Every structure is written in C-alpha cells, then in structure tokens.
Length: 111
Image (cartoon, rainbow, N blue to C red; front, top):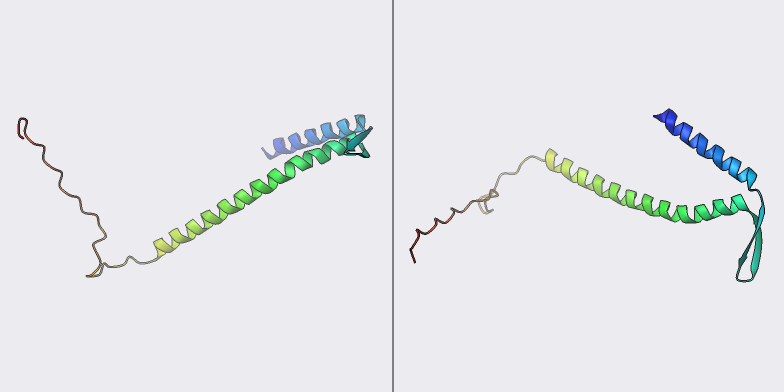
C-alpha cells in the first residue's frame, strides 16, 4: 500500500513538472490599477495555496479540539474505573433506581 501511495505522488509530481515546463509563460495580472507579471505555474501554485491553507488550518483546528475532548473523556473514564466504588451513606438516597409497579388494567365495562 505504501508503494502505491508513493507511486501516486511521484506520478502527480511528474505531471505537475511537465505542465510547468510546457506552460512557463509570462502572464499579466491587473488588480485595481496594479499590473504584475508572473509565470503561469507560479500563479497557479499561489492560487492553490490561497485556497488550501485556510482549509488546512480549519481542519487541523477541528482535529485538535476533538483530540482534546477525547483525551479529557478518556482521562475521566480512567479515573472512574480506577477509583474504588463508594458505599452509600445513611443520609444519601439509594443510587439504584426503583421500579414502580405497573398499574393493572381496569376490567372492561368498569367505570
């Protein structure tokens, strides 16, 4: 599987290099009166990074928050498992729930 992943990235890189070599042309960009000349592959790389980096930051932030919540939950669970069970005291209500008897249905015709 690692070989296929490496092969995939080598092929993607080779295609990108061939594209960059064949399209190494100067392009003009005009933004509100300012004209900039830049090579086309560099422009495409810059546009890609402008779109990719904010989403990468959002994704990493969400992963970090979820990892912190999971760690906190795992620590609380481990503490709950490691702590000895406590005996109910005389003043504390019983921790086990008590079921109430279900009401008996009224016979048919009874008011």
